[in-house]
Length: 145
Image (cartoon, rainbow, N blue to C red; front, side, top):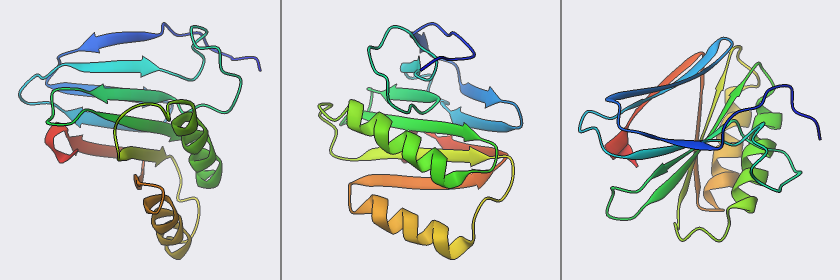
């Protein structure tokens, strides 16, 4: 698979506000205590030998009682494709010790009906994936995880 952008693998962030943005979609992690966050730009990263679908970013929150991975997909309007990218990325990191995985898709347009979104959330929850989606901008507090 060819990627239209190349990003470095990861970087350590201690910002009070970590902003991930692509076109018209943004995810903001509010990190008031400036805890250490590892940001992995997974899609387009050549440092992982993985050829499947990838979400855009993965945040590793390790200053919690139990560390978590947060999978983020910034998308136009195809939420089902975003979910597929997130699920394949989670599968790649399945050996990670976290029981729960958090996954967020931020779209630039409302992609599918709210009942379909609720069904997807329930399906993912059965896989221990806490999923949420929002249009254009999503803000989450570090301690929500």
